[in-house]
Image (cartoon, rainbow, N blue to C red):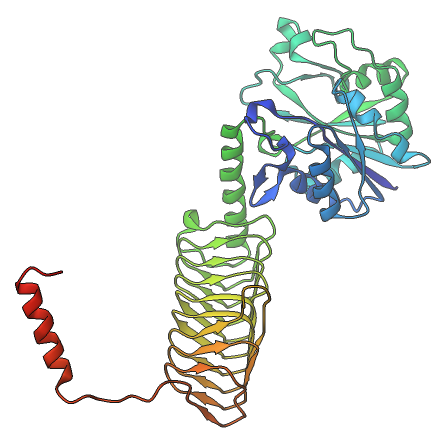
Length: 448
């Protein structure tokens, strides 16, 4: 059966004390909304509708970057969750299938949970996601009769007996789309908050002779984000899950609590990730690589058996081929290092292509920026770049060529040639000693 996602992302999140819409606050360097869309995406939805409100334009841009097929609709006045879902109706006109309602500030719903809800639709007209709460607090309660859900009661409207229940409502619902919108039409706002509650559809469905059921999940999956403290706790929970999954997948993490992952980080089995490594968005690391301590990676690809760090920085566009090595205090940006290429010390390689087995000495710099435009440096296979070489792009060093240490290379170097681009050294007999003696005498007289 076809599936549509309706993701509610209109809230301001006033308790975040931020101008940023709540659903754009990040966990794992990705907005909360992206986590929700990613989770829903495992259902392979035929349509996805994001309901925006506060900061609508920014939220819409984020949705479009995730998938340009996503339709966004606006809830200009926040009148409750049923009202929010109703805004998606025009975008789903003519749709025949199930609608799954998710929340842009609830990032941890597992794919298996959503699959279980879809499967439960074979037995129920409406399926609600519930959880047993350690501290039910102000959650809405699920009122059951055997395996059948009778009603969802918001905390504000619950009596003492209902508040004593521990089975709570996550807000996530799966139902036939036409049925869902038909029920929403009948929802009123005669309640303590004066809002149109999506939860009221269960009672309305029962009154129509429709069935409602519950699928349960771990409470941690339903964690919603409303405050900075909750965001920090969610980040910690995300990192713990990501590290645990990496270890299960065969990644070697000697000090897992020190490694920071992004939402889309992929690290292959048998890769060693040493302490205090940060993976920013867009990183893939193949199996068997080594990422040494205190390195920072973003928007890059590291191939099998490559070595990064310690204290290295890979910026967007960096690609390391098999066996390439990037050492301490080396920065690589928008550059490809061929198989076995080495940049081991104190170097900057930007907008460059480095051939297989080339060796870049300490202090090598590709001078790629003229103040207005970026220019490319090409270094051939097996080339040897002497320490402290400045390669002023655009420039090419051929296969097997060599640059002398301290050279400023401004012209192409043919394959196999030696380039020397520095002033000729001259020695002045005795002048060093005389100069130092004069300076010593001035200092003894207190002259600076």
